[in-house]
Amino acid sequence: MKEIARLGLILMLICAVAAGSLSYVNGITSAIIADREEKEKIAQMQKLFPDVATLEDKTVDGMTATIGLDGAGKMVGLLAEARTEGYAGTIRFTLAVDGSGKIVGVNILSQSETPGLGDKIKEPAFLSQFVGKTGKDPITAGQDIDILAGATVSTRAMASGVKKALAEILVRFMGAEAPKQPTFNPSALKDGKYTGTADGFKSDIKVEVTIVGGKITEIKVLEHNDTANFFKMAEEEVIPRIINKQSVEVDAASGATGSSKGIMQAVLNALAK
Amino acid sequence: MSVMKDLSRGIIRDNAVFRLVLGLCPTLAVTGTAENGLGMGLSATAVLVCSNLVVAALRNVIPNKIRIPCFIVIIATFVTMVDMLLNAFLPALHAQLGIFVPLIVVNCVILGRAEAFASRNPVLNSAADGIGIGLGFTLALTTLGAVRELLSKGTIFHANILGSGYQPFQVFGFPPGAFIALGLMLALFNMLSRKFRLE
Image (cartoon, each protein chain N blue to C red):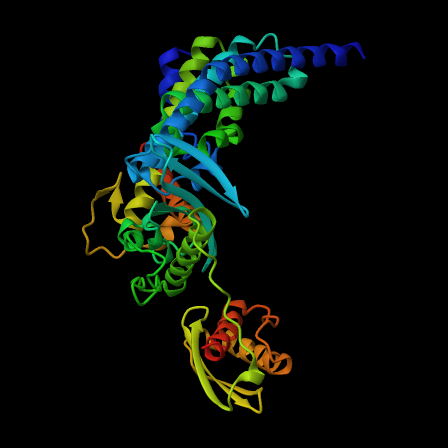
């Protein structure tokens, strides 16, 4: 008993000295670290927006942005964090947008894409393609964003992620109007065949939708270049569900979410025109 | 044993990685490039020297039964201090090393030296042992990092060595490549040590 108390006391003493010295070092360093981090943050913003004088953090609908204000308190630009689903997990990135709604820079915070192929998305040569884009640009892989060889899925994920994040920033922090969700009403459509295209998992999916008597009767996939067996799963499950429900708001085929969502969006695009 | 001998012994004869085969977790995990290997090696050396000093100074105070928790507390304290000091005064290096610094706590080379050497030897010899083992560890990590960086990227310390026509061995940038490279280097080291009769 006495022995245990002695050992405990010695260990406690050593811990107390350790804790004391740590809190002493922390007292010296924490102020320096906090001060440097604040300065780095402002310096980082000034690199993007030279007129920034002060910073303000703002959260709207779950999206947090650091807003840079000039001396007069006017917004000169903002930096927000966003994420997108890549080939091998979530890609986290920051998006810098100036006061006019133009992209100033994109920076990857973390990603786990294939080394040597998909991880080229973090290279300046790729990311600089987004600079200068606005909400009016397509920001689509294969159109105004070059597809990295061997990394189609990663490229598409970044392009659609940036496009979506920019649209959200414009609505939440820049006062742009939220775009209307396109809808359709099959009973109001004339009989005939309608075609539409949308983003699949790694390619564009083109569908032909047949309307007879105000009802969706047939959906045919005209073109796609997604992974064949996953696409088949999506096709076999999602198309009957859409026809059954006469709506594109149906469950995706599990394991083939990318292709499923692509089919739904393509049908919507076909009919909402 | 003389202080100088304690210092030099750790570099080649008792090299932590190639001879004692200790501390393999950081050895495998952070040696993707020569730069990371060097940074990790030097940080571990700093902690090793400090912890050896304190453990040796307290070797007659710490009871045998609770020596391991005491060593861990001492090591963790120094690691945290190094982490905070780097963050405050050398932010560029701190950003470079990132997660590797806190990982030094679980580096068994440091605990191993506290247990095997510092708890039984005077302060000066323990400090010398810390420096020697630390330098040997740094040397091993930097070499392994350089070999892996050369094979996986064609560069060493970001300097292009093999030219742009080199088709990289991607696998050496990944964990399996770390095992393969370490195995080959251990074999080479064993061969050399037999030749020069280090046994």
